Length: 295
Image 1 (cartoon, rainbow, N blue to C red):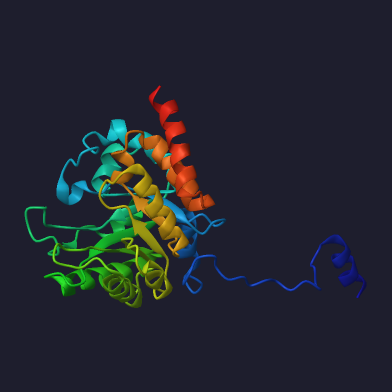
Image 2 (image 1 turned 30 degrees about the vertical axis):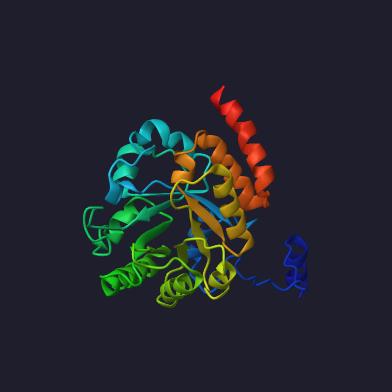
């Protein structure tokens, strides 16, 4: 008994304070393994529960998109201002400095170019290569309603299975073909299907009517796709409305790297996403930073 008392005096066991078993900050992720939660915590800020991804993977089917002609010169300097970067393994290996510590979301699907039927994709990355490159997540397109819908869904479930094997989350990107209606009904279907079949993150488009029904009916985090280049205020408003409508972040590309002041745009979007900066104030911030960046 004396020995036990001596041990208690030398060490602190806090016998009267039970160990907490907290949940996880990210929607639908409480039952995931430690490694996958750790990777998600690198992509999503644990304080805000949100992320600003920087999408520069357009070249995998579009070639050198405007603004992505020289990634080493114009894009790499912007990566340091993002929470995560979304790109292909080719650009990661050839162009991104290994000293960059931002989490990588790696594009793992491919096949057709813009000259062909885009939904005819296959998996294009081996999971072992994703592991070698220390990625935080793997991602692919899912073409709900597309000509090769079933193939793209099976690509996703195979990627989810491989990711679960090694603790790497999968982000499903809901691609929209030219004949598909961009409305809440369609995106509720596409997002819910991807979540039901195992994706841990969904990237989808914002719609002004009913977006909150998309996020509410999807049991995993939704990240808003930036889409085509639009006026700065419109892009900032879209990002703000998506966050207020339940999105857990944005994944912007063209609205950042095609902006007149890309670094200013990245910094402003960060404030909108993580600090709920309203569009009018965000535009003022962008203009101020733009003047500093271009002078």
